[in-house]
Each structure stands twice: as C-alpha cells, then as structure tokens.
Length: 101
Ligand code: SF4
Ligand code: SF4
Image (cartoon, rainbow, N blue to C red; front, side, top):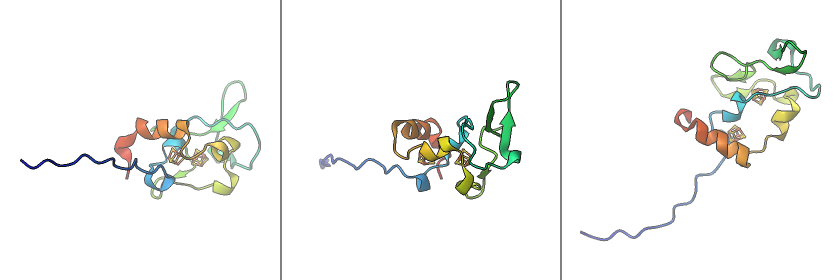
C-alpha cells in the first residue's frame, strides 16, 4: 500500500458566517441602555434585565432563518463586546457543533 504523507491541515477559520449564532444562546444581561425593544427584555423578580430567551435557549431577537441579530444596531453591550475568535467564542462553537450550517 502506498504511504500517504501526513500534512498539517489548517485549523477551520472561526467566523460568524460559519457559526449557528452559538453565542446567542448565552444569558445576556442588560447592563446599559442601548435601546433594546421592550418585547425582547426579560425582567427577573429582582428587577434585573436580560435578553429574553425562547424555550430552546436562543435569544428572542435572533432571526431564525438567517441566524442574524434583528436588533444589531441596538444590541446589548455584552453582545458588542463578545469577540469573534476569543476563547469564549470557540468554546460556544464547540458546545453545539452539530447545528453548524
Ligand atoms: S462570535 Fe463566535 S460564537 Fe458568536 S456567532 Fe460569531 S463565531 Fe459564533
Ligand atoms: S441581542 Fe442579538 S447579538 Fe445579542 S444575543 Fe440576541 S440575537 Fe445575539
């Protein structure tokens, strides 16, 4: 049998366009007012505000066809600071790799 040389394959690129919005299943507390519409806000018994999540865990502001944020210009600070390719991002992607499109 012919020997096939082992090669180093490049690691798959981490980009939001190849991701099923994994980070949009995390709890997102609203710590500043960025203008998130009230219908997407959940308030707990102590008055703390967070993005409303649907029964399957995804943020209610996520467009489920395009998997894009429908309130991008008004998205919470935490979403703005969540960095693509950062350890938290990679961890989330690995957590639900089976739903990648
Ligand atoms: S920031 Fe990371 S986890 Fe969030 S959508 Fe982009 S690639 Fe996916
Ligand atoms: S507000 Fe937008 S970016 Fe933030 S979790 Fe919801 S859908 Fe994702």
